[in-house]
Image 1: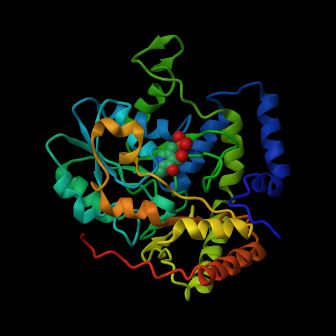
Image 2 (image 1 turned 180 degrees about the vertical axis):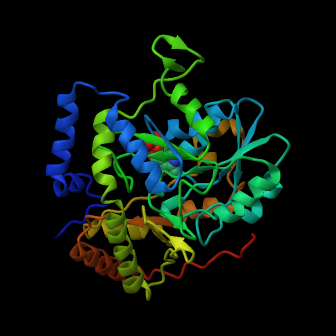
Length: 381
Ligand SMILES: Cc1ncc(COP(=O)(O)O)c(C=O)c1O
């Protein structure tokens, strides 16, 4: 039986071995490993790719979000609007500063923050909003940015899953007041370890972030404020520069797989993810919905197809957030999603043959398990 892995993290290195080896060797020989020429070049190149004026590298995606909120002076007593369905890092960025996350439910068709629900969550204490480009689909940024402008609330894009995504010709990372990026290895633009960045058009914000990421220091041993150590290493910056050149091509390969899944699985009873009609969805993960999700997942595993769940438990039901007292039933759209979502193998190095194996296995399992149609919820429960 041919096994299909969910994601092949080593394939990018195998494809670009010569260029990557040369980049690493260049850094190792330079004798300069932090805050050097590679980082400066990557920041310039990534800002240009995104269409933002500034890019500030940092240690990981969580720090990118947290440092930006900190630079906006957000802290205890402040509220920040977050999706009820996201990776927990979005919430952790808020709570690590002592601020309060205010969850808003997603649009069940897009998986992204439902803009029509945002205004009722705004209070005088709301100090920021963090829409997430979840699964690689851009959030409804036109609506969200105009709500932000109307209420004078800054918008921080959580772009950890949206490298290369765009809306109406503008790329994720240039659609809000700032954007936090993760270069975790499995991301569409992934490093060989942890990495992150912030993009923004705001020069003063970028300047403060450069200070905050480096112990609060602009000049060695002079500390303006209590910063942190969160830097993007030269080795990572150099390899990210190589991979950035392939991002569009690799996203196009993901889109081809997504199109093939849609075509082949259209006659199953599964609820398939929609493409973005006004822009580019970069298919960080391909998430279907199925009422009998756990049975389907087990049957696919028996046939050698590895799947993942993004995510099994929403943040408000994690023990980490028990103190917020948001019991089961508080966010029904999100809770139902977490019971039904299943991510099929996806990545720029998934071969066409392997994608066909996945489709054959899904179709067979749907028949064998008599998978029933997973209905759309009414727009408002
Ligand atoms: C939506 C989202 N936000 C934030 C993060 C945090 O990024 P990192 O793992 O680099 O800290 C991730 C990824 O892990 C993510 O998926």
